[in-house]
Structure formats: structure tokens, C-alpha cells
Image 1: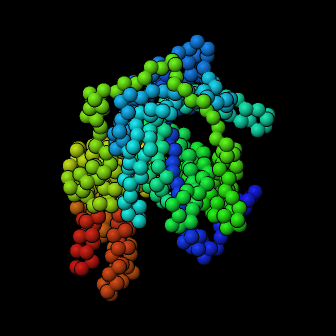
Image 2: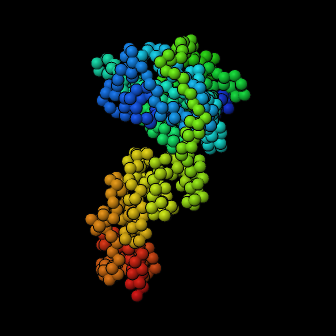
Image 3: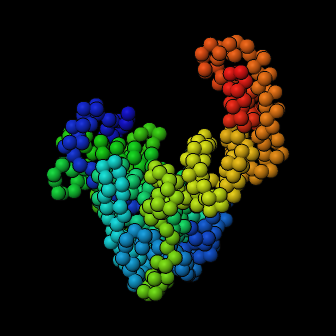
Length: 497
């Protein structure tokens, strides 16, 4: 339930939700901020590494000292162009930077260097796919800008301190048109953007570290109306779960206000995912005048046809093309191909492992099965996978050769997943190789049969499931290292004598 708080609405009954969905349409546009994967900041040589001690990645430029001058990082421009080309945008070949003037404690210059009048990319689109089908979401523009610092609030001492490490970290802001109509479409759009940008290597897009953040602009209107309703903005949502909850909560809040005959106020709101409610931060009825003007310290950026061609030439294979290629080249099921290509790291791991062992379906099985299980168990993301492709390939070869059985293979893989061990050395060190000595196995089977006369009697009396128990006891006696096929053959042979 969404809690009611200061004119915020809780969920209505299921029937009420159905009625609302029939009468009102949700209109959503997004502003997505992405931190680019450069090693240095946009206008200085300070490190962009995440997690440094406060105010250690700073210099006079990114702390706004008088007399310091910005110098544009070329890689920022190329990453922005790459994202623009991948999202079907037109590159603005003559673009420039502007100053957005405002005061906030974590904004050291009292202005932000951004692009208003001539952004680097315009008029693009991406295709999304939801349960309702495929749809194009238009992109109004992509512009380059610098990030602000970070305020750290100490509630115990009632003070706030400023960390400027993030100040000057390069961003692109991707501004969509208001083309989305549901939380499902928003999540599909964000996932498409994230996959595209990760495949390009332009950003890691880790929402939990703030390298991808979304502001949601949302309004509602009666179904069939062409006029937009009054929109609100929800700032810096940093998980897909929070974004989906915020959209549903804000949609219901606005509809309830309209149903009561009240107006929706244009404002910025903050979503509290723990309380499942939002609260107003500031009103936007009178739009703030940021007094934009061209930055006098930065010359316009001139992008030649040749430069665009060079960036286009090195664009990697993106997910849609990779997905189709996997199904044709590797002959793996559509479902497997979709899961594997959702993460560039997983896709790279699949291709590298397959190149070594030449067994794409078995590589896919290990990634889809044990890898996904362990990722879930350890609360990790596919991008966190760190084991070497050669170790997974070697494990698959060991299992195929019968050197280890399936049970041991899973045990060894868990060590590969956690510690990236060499499977051949691990198997040798721990004595895990399959016992293929038929005389030794026959002796073990005979002993199990002698120790379990009741199960032998059950089997001979027609209870064929008893053999499963006897095989299990044999595997236990062999410490899981026996060849299951050989144990089954010997067991059946001796039982039917």
C-alpha cells in the first residue's frame, strides 16, 4: 500500500485501479543522466574513480577557483557522439557549451557548464519491446555537461559537508520526448539505453553508484485528450524498482487529486522507496531563470564529417545485432540468447569461452544454469562476473572427457565462480577425478548390495525405484567420484543375475 501523507494517495481497490486506467492516460518523459567512463573529468585532469576519500580528486578547475580555465576532454565528445549514433540521433556538427547559473552548495562555480542552445545530439529514437509489443521512443536531445559535487548530511551534528570529487565528472543527459505511457515502457526504455551504452563502453551505468540516474516527468490526462496535464518531476531515482514504484505512486496521487476536483501543482518531488510515498521538494509554477549564456572560456566544438565517420567505424556490435547472430551462428534458443546478451559482460564471456571449447550450447547451459543461480545466491549482477573464460572452457572439456562427473563439475564451477581457480589443478589437488576402474566400482556395488538386502529384495519384487537408492549409496561410498553411467550398468547387471 502507498501511504497517504500530505495529500498523497494510497492505492484504491483493484476495481478502482481498473476504473482509473480506463479513464486516465499517463504521459511520461525522462531525463537520464549518465556518467561517462573517462579516466579524467570533463574539463580537467582529475580522476573520475568512484569511492575516493572526500575532496581528493580535485583541483582549482573542478572546485571553481577564480582564474582557473576549463579544457575540454576529447573522449567526452567521442562518447557522446557514439551514444548519439547508436540512438539514431543527428550529430550537431557545430555545438557549444553554455553556463547554467544557479547557487547550490555543491556547485562550486555557482554555474554549471552544460549545453542548451546547440546540444551535440538531436532528434533520435530507440526501439523498446514490452509485453504489449514494440514501440519507438523519441529522443529530443543528448547534451554534454559537468556533474556537481555531493552534499553529505550529518543528522547527528545537524551539519552538511561538501565532497567535490564528483564535481566536473563528465555527463551526458539524454532527454526523451513524452512518449512513454507506463512504468513497463519506462523500464524497457532505460534497460535499452543501459545495454546500448554499456555495449559502447561509454559508461558502466551502475544505478547503485549513481553513474546512471533518471528524472521522471509525469502527468495524467483523460483518455482521448490531446492536451497534456500538469506534470511533476521526480529527481534522481537510482533503481528500476524505485522508478517503477514512483511512477505508479505519482500516477495515483495525481488521479486522486483530479477526482477530488483539485489541481495538480507543477513541482519537483522526491520519492521515498521505504515509505512508498513522495513529498514535494520545490514548486516549479514559476520556472527558474537560469540566465543561460555561451561559456566564454570554451570555444565551440566543430565536428567534421571525417570525425563522425571515424567514431561510426569503431562502433561495436550492439545487442540487437548480437542477439540475431547468436541464434544463427551458435544455434542456441532465443530465450538463452536474450538472457546472455542482456549483459555485455555475459555476452563477452560466452563468446570467449565458446571460442576456446567450441561447444556453444554447453557454454550457454553453464551460464544460464549454475552461473545465474550463483549470481542470485550472492546478490550479484552479471557485470560482476570475474572468472576467466579459459577456466569455464577447461571445466566443460573435463566433464565431456569423463574426467569428472556432473556433481563434481558443479562443485568445481562454484570454486571457479568465487575464486577463478584453474579447474584441472583444483581437481588434481582435491582428488576429484572420476573413478573409472571397473573392478573397484564392481567391488563397491557388491558391498552396497550386501549391506542393503531389503532394497535388493524390493527391486527383485518389482520396485524398480529401489535401484536409485542403491546407486546413490554407491556414489556416496565412492565420495561422488564414480562414473554414474558405469555404476548404473554394474548395478543393473548384478541385480539381475
